[in-house]
Length: 262
Ligand code: DGL
Image: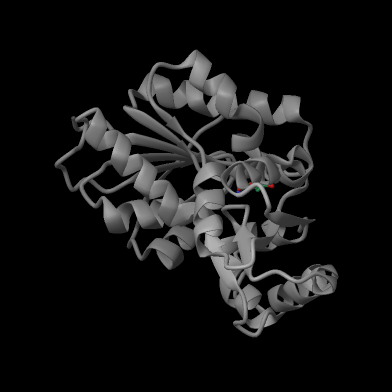
C-alpha cells in the first residue's frame, strides 16, 4: 500500500523521528507537517494544542495517509486518545515508546525526563514509566529554552551549549542513570546534553523505539510500501529555514518543502 505515513510536530522536532523512519523503513513514503509558525506548543494550553494538532491531522487525513505518527510529545500527551477516537487510521505517539526504551535501558530505575512545560505538567511520562516499572523514580524537568534554539537553527552554537548547561543544572541534586529526551526537538541538542553529563548517562530518544511500533503495525495490517519516493514536508513557517534544517539533519539535497496554512 503506497499511501504515505503522516508525521506531525509543532515544528522541526519530528524530523528526528523522520530520520529514523528513513533509516529503518526506507520504502515508506512520508508526508510531514511542522507547525513552525505556532511553535512552541510547550507553553500553550491543552485546548490550544489539541485544536492545532487536529488541524494538522485533518489536512493529512484529506491527503490520504495510511497511518499517523504524532512526532511531538506535547501533542501526544494531550491529543493521542482524541485522535485515535476520531480517525480510522492507526495512530502512534512518542511517549510510550520513549518510556519503554528508558525502562529497558535503566539499571537503577531512576530516570530523568526532559520535556516541554506541557509534557512535564501532563505527567504522561511518569504514568507510562510507572506502568512498566512500578518502583521507578522519575525526575522531570521542563526545558523551555531548548525548542526556540532548535527552531532558530542555532542548535550547534556555543549559546546552545550554554542554555543546555544552565537548564540542566537543577538535575544534579538527583541520582539517575537514564535521561529521556521527552521532546522530539531535543535530539538536535543531544551532543550538548551528552557532554553536559560527561557521557555518564544513557540518553534515550523515543525516535528509534517509535519506528519499532510503526513497523509492527505496517506488518500486522499488511500496509507496507515498496516505493522510494522522497518525503514531502509542509510548514506553516519559513520554507527556507525548514529546508536548511532538513538538509542538515536528514542529508536530503533540495528537499520538497511546501507552505501550508491553518
Ligand atoms: N517537539 C515537541 C515535543 O516533542 C514540541 C515542542 C514545542 O513545540 O514546545 O514536545
